[in-house]
Amino acid sequence: MPDQSPTRSDSAAVRSGGPEIHSLTAVRGIAAWWVVFFHFDTYLRPYLPSPVYYVISKGYLAVDLFFCLSGFVIFLNYGTLNTGSSRELFNFYLRRIAKIYPLHIFTICLYGLLVIVLMLTHRDPTSRFSGLSLLLNLFLVQDWAILHGLTWNVPSWSISAEFAAYLLFPGAVLLVRFVGGRVAFGFMVFFSLLFLLNFFYASQDFRIGSAIETLGVARAATQFAIGALLADFFLRAPSASRLSQASLLVLAALFLCAGLNVLESLLIPTAWACLVFAIAHGDRKRDFLNHRWLVFIGHVSYATYMIHYFVRDIFKLALVHADETVPLHYVLGIFLVIFAASVPLYLYIERPAQRYLTRKTRSQRASA
Image (tube, rainbow, N blue to C red):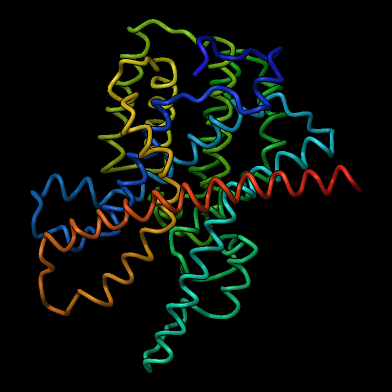
């Protein structure tokens, strides 16, 4: 990570990749594993104290941290985007698609093989694997209030919702520029975005994990915009006192503890905003979150997120029997399998495919 964060005049550095805030990368990895534990909570429940199980059962809230983090990091890299330039917009969307699409398609192919095996063994693959839902998944629009129920690779609903946020990113850039670093105005926009989010979730008793298929895009886009707003203020004032960071962390903890019980759609996004802003300002090489293994877990977190549900489905088919408690060592072994699978997926599919697609499309555009 560079010694200094980029400013608005440092557009070349920003657009070429910008600084990586390693502690935020580590947080992304921790959040990904919270989601993994959440999807295995049924099998973990017999072995966990009630308070620990309760926290794990709220793992769906980690997705909201992803949305805020994505808005923050993407604005850090593309906040100087010229929204009137078709070339810059093309490059932005190309990079986003190249980042998320290869592993998305890979996991769909894995599920395609699973469906074939189920059919050959005379087992019903269920409506989760319909032809229409496959088509919508291929175009990453499965979570755009079209389907009823989660389909194919279940966690990819959030990738679909975030893809919609990418499409809206130029609007987020214009909104942030309109704020112009004015703190009072920034607070107004922040609370307006929160109000908008809670307007949608009022009918769900403010449970932000509800109505995923219909409200997922609103959930992603508003928190993505909040992350972008925070990134702009971070770029304008990249340093902060330890007292300010500690205060933000305390606020994040308070909002999180409260949000685990009530008003999720109000308190959880606020908690994540405080957490992201505090950690970004407190990024130091010797901090716990900068440990190389935690950062590496963060780097492979997208692969972890995309593959874990497929591993869970295989685990459920092969090792889970009705009315029987799954041995703990089975579950722990599956966690090792998920991590072991994440590493080659990241090294040999995600990164190479991203580089290839970016280079290939650029060369074709240059020759056009």
